Length: 138
Image (tube, rainbow, N blue to C red):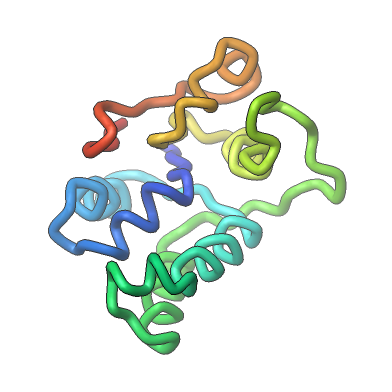
């Protein structure tokens, strides 16, 4: 199965290696193919360097880069079009994530973001899966 993980899932995995998101990511990379884009890695780097988030994971820039580099090596990287289509009406910042899933022919988009569950998004994207706020799943 080809799986795209939303940045919010990847951030949670970096914050706590024992969190459900980290366990999920570990299972995905072991059995499935992670589909990602350069956009997603850039966003992940940016989010993990924010002071509020850094206080949660306590990683310095070198360890953040190592986390992202390992994920990059385990992923199928897909190019995104120069112009990202508008798919997510209530949160356009999520358009590149959905576009990554579509471009990478992902079977599942794993997220905690409720905007990605809207019918208009589901019509354009692979199956979007999540559970409770604390536990993403696919």
